[in-house]
Image 1 (cartoon, rainbow, N blue to C red):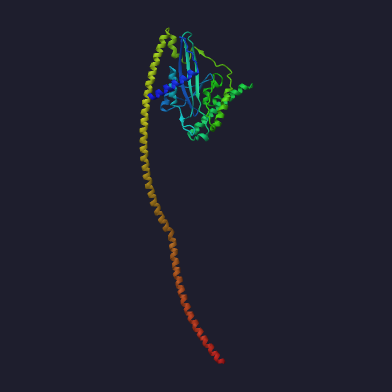
Image 2 (cartoon, rainbow, N blue to C red):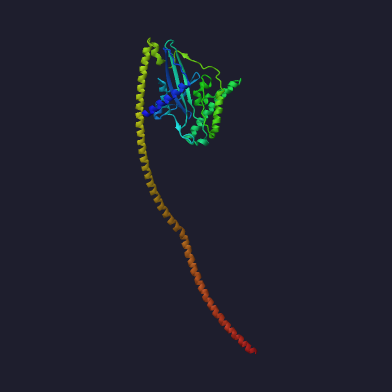
Length: 406
């Protein structure tokens, strides 16, 4: 925790130094002016809005939040609003919220943001002299970059996230094109489709010209990302041509939803005493917040240990179950093998049996034919003997015949 705190302090100091070099801020010398800052932080993940500063985000049990509208101004129901006493508090709250944001790995970026995030900063100023309250809302949007499937290699959840990101960016581009077209055309203005995505719903005041809008784009200076850089430049060129038609309204109310924080200052004749009491209360709340944060961290650490223990138990049970399943499967395979061998033997015997009968019949026929052949050979010998006797007798008759003739 100490290293993390030192890292945050160094980051805040570096950012503060850069801002002071670029801008010359004048310190207000009005002793009656009191300034208060509240911040909120949300992310838009898969077209669902999640609070990055709520207690649910600490333990990962997040619930989508509803976007409502009041007099054309969109707001998020039950959104956490945290008081910040200094710029360092704002920076630390921002870093705390980023720890709950959604990141993932792709082929292009190992720590790719999988959502759009919007950091709301409400600045409330109260004048003790005029008893008027002025407030301004700043929205800092960090948009996830458009992604191409061929380069990122997304699939599964990453693919679904990329689809939602690209769709919301496409809706933002359509809104900017419609605003630009309405400014150029003298015909009936087209409706800006701000309600087609959660991102454009939350920044609709700026898209409709009620608030100032500035855009910063990032380029990747390599030939591989030429198409992406070209799309970003085309996108930003349309935004650059949009001209704010009407000045943003400046609301100066005597009563706002932050008025209850200033109740003591408006009701007490001694504003300085009330201011000191407010600062004491602020310090007390900071201490309570630090204590609650430590409690949550300890609970989170206990939950992490419990999860690790449960994972080990699940692993052991899974290993035991796998061994039991393996033994049962081997026993089943052995039984099936024995059954198949028995069936194979029976099948062989059943298949050979008809052929055995045929072989027996054929052997009997062969024996019969052998006997027939033997008898025929015997008869042949008898016929040869008779033929020889006939030939001898014929020869005798021929000799007698010749003697008679001569």
